[in-house]
Structures are given as C-alpha cells and as structure tokens.
Amino acid sequence: MKKLSARRRHPLAAVVVLLLALAATGGLYAAFAPAGKAQADETAQSLAIDEGKKLYTVGCASCHGTGGQGTTDGPSLVGVGSAAVDFQVGTGRMPAQQPGAQVPKKKVIYSQAEIDQLAAYVASLGAGPITPTDKQVDPAGADVAKGGELFRNNCAQCHNFTGKGGALTKGKYAPDLEGVSPKHIYEAMQTGPQSMPSFPDTTMPEQEKKDIIAYIQTVNGSETASPGGLSLGGLGPVSEGLFAWVFGLGALIAVAIWVAAHTAKAKKS
Image 1 (cartoon, rainbow, N blue to C red):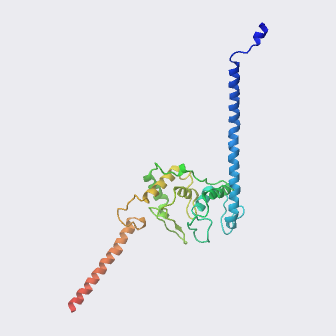
Image 2 (image 1 turned 180 degrees about the vertical axis):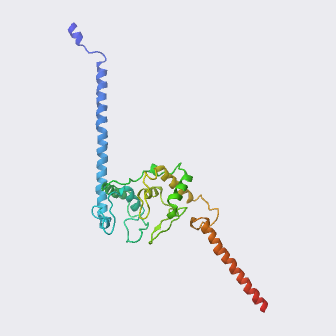
Image 3 (image 1 turned 135 degrees about the vertical axis):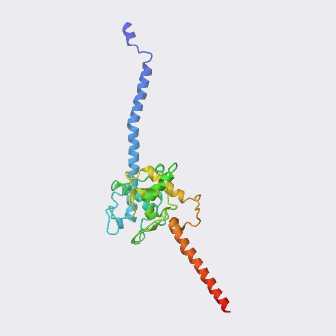
C-alpha cells in the first residue's frame, strides 16, 4: 500500500500537464505562423511580379528591352525602383505616345493594381527607391514655412516660387505642380524624373519632403488668396512691377498721344 500511494499523482499534476500543452501549442504557433504568413506574402509578391512581367512585355519591352536593360529608344530600368514606375505610369507619362524632348503628363491607361504589378516586376530587376506609404506622404502637421524655404532653395529655379512651372533648355520644361498628388510629388523627389535631380532620404529626409508637399498644397490651395490680384504665374514682384511699368506706362503714353492729336485737330478747325 505504501508503494502504491507513493506512485499516486499529485492533485495539481493535471493542471501542470495542461499548462505545458498550451505552452507547447503556443510555441508551435509562434514558430510556424510567422513563417506561414511570410510564405503567403512571398507567394503574393511572386504572383504580382509574374503579372507585372506580362504587362511589361506588352507595354514597355519594345522601348526598354525584354529584361529592362534599355535600348536606343528607352533607358535601362534596372535599379529605378518601384517609386519610379508608380510616378511615370501613375501620371500617364508612360507608356510614352511618341519620342520628344520631354514626355508630358497625360491620361492614365493602367489601373492602380496593374501599376503596382508593373512596379513589382521592375523592382525585382534591381534595388531602387520604394513606393512611399500614405503615412510617408501625409503632410499633416508639417512645417509650411520650412517647406517654403526648402522649395525656394531647391525647386523654385525650375518650378517657379509657387510651383507654376517654367521653361528649361532644349524644349524641356518644369511642370506645373498644382493639383499633383502628394505621393507623386514625393516620388518625383525620390527618383528625379527627366531633367529633375533626385533627392534621396540621405540628401533630403522624409520630414523635409513632407514640409515641401505642405508648402506646395498651401500656396496652390483654394483658401490662399493673392493680395496683389492677378498673380502673373507667381513670378514675384519683379515681373509684376515690370508688367505695371510696360503696360501701365504704355497705356498712359497712348492716352497722351490721343489727347494731343485731338487737341491739335480741334485747334485747326
């Protein structure tokens, strides 16, 4: 009897076994669930790349090469990243209608889902700037005054002080920034499309990009009034003063000539 009672289980033994089982189950879940999620994400990414490659073959390969290596009709896309694709295709600049000094913005022919697939395929060709998230491009809480200073120092030489755009050399131009989405402004700074220099995060941090976006939206917003009336493209007081002198003084001279001519005619009669 003493031997049997020595082998009798402790009343809490079942509870300990249950806790160990639950711990083991949780450990297995922690070990395998993330791997399963990662595998699902990898599969989705592979499918996006495959679909993007199909779209690329039809709409892009004739100019950029079958593997994105570039041709005489289009530059290499290796290393441009998903941000460049999202900007160029998302603004309708690509596919280009015809060669020229600069590819203009036009109607977008791809859906956002197709653009994402194209971007996934091009990104797979080589590492490059990644398409920003909504949080990265959200200008809420940004410093508009700081953004104005950054814009005037880095962008106004081409885009004008208020982002109205301007002419460049050899038939190129800096486009008007009014109405451009924050994401596309951010991507343009990331990738430097056409004649524009690029501003990676090492040169211009994310917060400074947000400040610039906030400034552009503020000066071109419907609530921003021009105290001088006609803005004349926002070129500043020099152009506005020149306009006043040329046209205002010209009008006064014309009136003076008219008065003198009619006065002389009246004296003769």
